[in-house]
Length: 326
Image 1 (cartoon, rainbow, N blue to C red):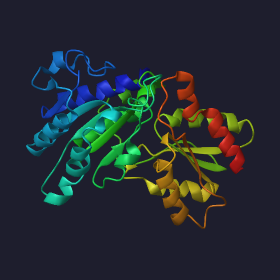
Image 2: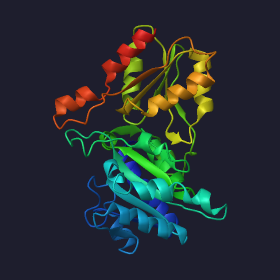
Image 3: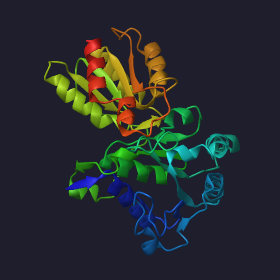
Image 4: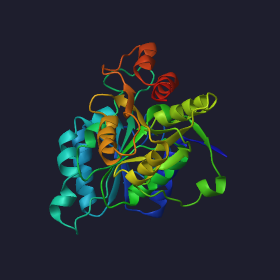
């Protein structure tokens, strides 16, 4: 069967709400309207207004109320609509959500999931097209997940909801309608994917390419194109950025001896910058050349769709960089 990324998110929410009556959803337009992308459509009718609630457009209140609910034993899954809207609630997320479990001891739990639609979205402009993972990777205590496929999105969201640690769950907007062929029995089962486990999406021998979120399908397309030129690219999807599965990545570098990172977010101080610094030190003796970073140009995202596509890495950018490394 084929399933879209967006439907996988909906399925995960439905299954967890049916499994555990402590799971609750609230956020901007998630109830009657069913979320701006339709991902929570039908949940209000099935679970009622006590468990599926609209909120005012006040992100600080959404996160603050979710913290309080999690502290009392509920498992809130709150939505900030766009990832950009984490900024009005930055203090709550950075100081309270990420730090309080560490600050208050081992018996304190904070089972909270913050969902957000991340990245570019065909002309949404500079204030509705950001990826924020790199910003929040600077907040110890916060789990950060960015799935790239429908199968991963469902399994990881279910794991996030069951976790006693707070999770920032970033969903690339341009992947919502992407379809994936999955085994129907497996997909409809109560499966989960462990947090902190990377996935080798394609094996290769010449270059290790870490791809994040929206860049995973583009990396796979680039790898297919480069294979026709005799260049073998191993594509790794970290899936969880914090904590990071360094073992899988290091094992790949030992095989290929070259590393590149591709991300949708800006190049300066981005995900790739952190990964490059980490693996340049840890794998210094294994690397045969400098680590390459492929990322968005350091400009506010244009409204113009042609310019938006120019700013974000595409298959050609990835192929050109890999050829240069070889």
